[in-house]
Length: 181
Image 1 (cartoon, rainbow, N blue to C red):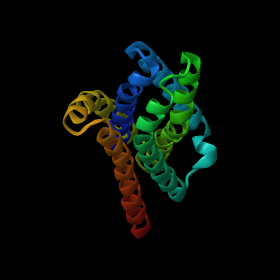
Image 2: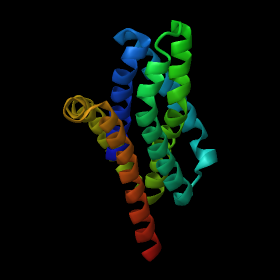
Image 3: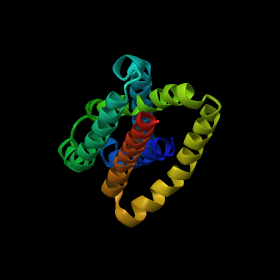
């Protein structure tokens, strides 16, 4: 839950900064990125039970897919911004939303799936999961700025994607531990 909270906010903040150049104003970038990510990840949360269910294998595949999609965004964002710079604003908004929605959709799946998994294993821990995720989101927002300053926006996006891989490792380790018990 720490990895999910920090990863989500790192990716979101880096995308806002990346797309300020394309959308022409920080308010547009903030609005388009946050709105698109909330709607797409909300839809991902809604469909998570159907897509992932109780399968640890499906959850690990989703976490890996998020890392791949975020890495693709990290590599494609700069050429996309450069290529679409002369487009009219509505087209820029559409292409921005289209570029980030797939990753955001999948980013919405691990949290509710993890909560279901944790509730089945140890339901009192669900409160802690919410708390840790929220704390990681708050601390991650400051960390995203520091990371972006020292490593760049692409590296910040990649680090956010790597945090989803970290969550995947935790799932794999706990799955192996549950099988051993």
